[in-house]
Length: 363
Image 1 (cartoon, helix red, strand yellow):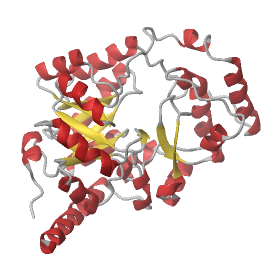
Image 2 (cartoon, helix red, strand yellow; image 1 turned 30 degrees about the vertical axis):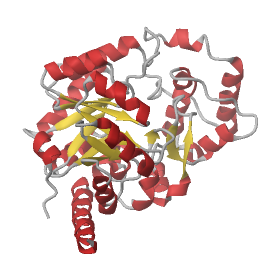
Image 3 (cartoon, rainbow, N blue to C red; image 1 turned 180 degrees about the horizontal axis):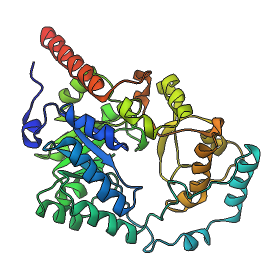
Image 4 (cartoon, one colour; image 1 turned 90 degrees about the vertical axis):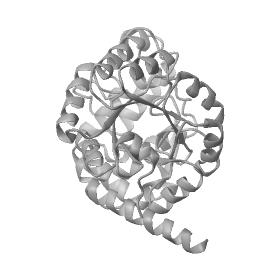
């Protein structure tokens, strides 16, 4: 059975499987395996984005790939850590200091991933410029889809995509002019919304009109892909699937890798303690400390970023095992060994074909 559909024809891919990863090698491997690799660059400096997109291009040749930025509204104008730190409540800082003392975390030797720079209009504009001047094939917006940015990307021949988590987001995303919508359900890893994937996808499909929709959240097998197609999606968006890929190993702390291998769907939790926005990750002492009685409510983005960013970096730098964690969706239950992206893709395709043949038998 040929999985190629109009979305595949439009994007020049073999399979309607979009793979999101923070690893240059994993993104390239997903594209080389017939899918559409998308690089998560929201925490990268503009010059790093230029260099890394050029590296992916070299790895995929004439193949297609994308890049994802998170562009939330309401961020501060300037990249000023001092300005943010001045507004962090003393009680929150005392709580974080208490974690440092309780778990004996040495200071970080450099800013953490969330404190390398402040999520701000200033940085966003420089990141967007780096993406738009590249030859990347797809510009994806993880949060927010500013119409002026979508318009500029499309004028440069780039496809555009927006991730959304609720039906009322559809009208604004379509008005911005995006080419593809991703209906991201509650099951998904990292930043996600409150509606389950099975409930969300058909609603987004119905509201999207002629705009193609990808299903995201809990997608781990070909049976999930077949179900997404049955719900009216034209493909899927997957992130958790690649966390244990061989190509992602350099981006993954060894302790975290073992936690991901052992995790089931019920071992993930949604917390705002990571970034200030709802974020699904594997449950560890980190999330439990923030859920404990007496813990303060996490701050809004980017204040939570600054409050915990250096500590999160120090936790991995100094191997503080109880607190090491990462984002992961409920689909992590299906992944318990390190395999290549090509093998993962092959299994997904074979399993999808079997599922669709089984459905044909039922009918």
